[in-house]
Image (cartoon, rainbow over all chains, first blue to last red; front, side, top):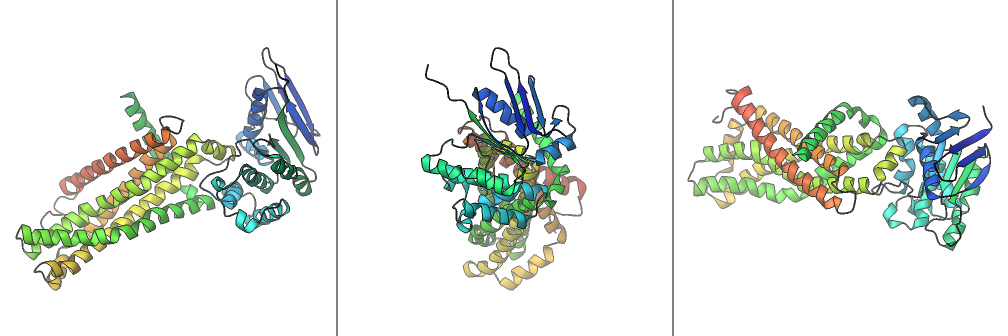
Length: 203
Length: 258
């Protein structure tokens, strides 16, 4: 088995190619050249599928041509916090956090509840009140917090966080910066990947 | 025309999918969603129909006896045919279309437009299992329950309230009713209301998950289509069902005049 958690290769006509290798157990901050490259990388990891011109290996296993069961197994080891966050608006924070695990029956609900309580408390939220709120009643940081705790509840060996600072003010960004320590405390052997766009100069 | 054909095809596909996937109710979040749907459709709607349903029964008896100058026997027969067999299931279906159908189609259209159905898919959650199956099953059960509730209130209300407004005896109404009513009347209306619930939920889920536009304007359009087509589906089922039961299948078993 390869020591790489992720290997991604994107070749496009007339645009900067992208080649990424992320060693297992590390924390990496990727700056991709354009939003198309970022969207394609996040989409490929999220779906564990690749389109033409892309190659993706996760934990040494190429995702092209994977059988359904192998793909699902690989998918279980990955957590992605996307920009859209993917929260369900008619479910409260707790239901959003526990939905995936409860649906698939992968993790006991008690363990998810413990993870959620501890993570929220250590990130400065009151679990009792926070977990009963709907996403529409939350500010951008709080929504991000729900999506992050949902990611933690999945206990992923590879966590990908897209544009962590997007839509957050300075104070909220400082609180969001603690996500890294929180993930690392729970998954010491896990791989954490922050994905952002490279800053472009003014024309 | 092409759109209508596409909608019929989509509806049939959804029908098959839902019928084959009822096993998804074993999963805890799907079951929770199902119970929530039953509560919303059946329990919260029931308080509003108490007065209307009991008033309806009294109105039918009073109208038949006072205006048409009929005797107690005919008044009870009309109460039985109209309320128990036809108006009860239809009234419940209309309450469900107006309260639940609108809410359900708007909610699903919003979820589809805002990308929440994609989010479910990315979590490995099949949106038909999580969104459609519990709604269809929940609305079916709740429509049948609401129908029974309306029937009970209309019949009991009619028999209890009528003696206060017209010259009719409660004992006479009561005796006549239990002489005429047969178990097949209840089976007929419950089966019909289950079919109404299935058609309403399926139509609303289909339009909610397939809004005509992927903008906010798509939500009211989806709701309008869902409500109008649900009403058409209910009236069509009612007509076909009545024809099959009274005209073809059990002719002689369920008689128009008992």
